[in-house]
Image (cartoon, rainbow, N blue to C red; front, side, top):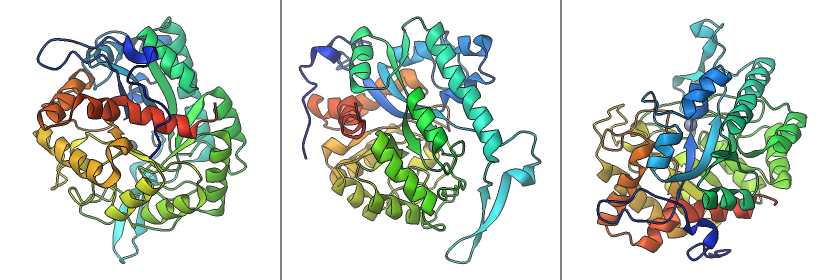
Length: 380
Ligand code: ZN
């Protein structure tokens, strides 16, 4: 394991203001979160709807005031294209035969022209938000950007696509989106694209739910490697995972997943997958959403923070303390009541602290590991 540098005494991040008060919550470091869907809440991405990000908004989990209250210095902000609302319900889902012979419902592939149109509207919304933020939110394209944001107390917004639905097989859109700031890409959400196949939301279920990457998917992996776009396996099925692992020369990252051995959801990672992530010097951002945490897979907010610690312990044991972070899934699912929203992030760290993680370990889990893996993946 090679740490590129220590951020511990790095003046580039030391000045980040965190809420102080009870007990150990006098930390002087930020939290970098590996996944949220908050952009989706700003639809239709007009100045009026975007303004909702800047004022306390008790809908959902994350806005600028709550990010600040939770000590969040940055994160991967997902661009997720929803199913076309003009479609009938049966046009949004399809029945897929699993390798074990069972049939499950999976979200249907999107029309590429529709996906591109929505992705452009959402990306335009990101840039409108950045302009309206007057320096308080900044799109980060380089590690230097990330550090500068954290030093300034601004929120670093890393553009992530949750699914390559808007990207053509010729990869022209990938080139353009990269120029615009795309730095992290999930090949699929839980539906097919021309590049691969996503996992359905099944519990209990194996992640082995269908075919692997297509030839276009393998080409996409290589091109992301060349451009320095991080690849996210969080919604990829198991064969796709192994295909990606074979092709990629970058660390393997799951931005928002949890442990299959504890919560056997198809979305979660098996021990073999964790071994591969470790071997690649990658990272798992622990999902805090209850159906990925709970052994029973129930959508029940009455879920104790101790369960987050249990997943974290398992990940740290299998991956090492340098390859685990947070990937909340704020605005993408149900959070434990005890966490609430982004303002509650320090409660997770407090729980870990009480469980025996020291400050050096907490710094790694909170942001250092994310910066390490991004620095290893990005080209500049
Ligand atoms: Zn997701």
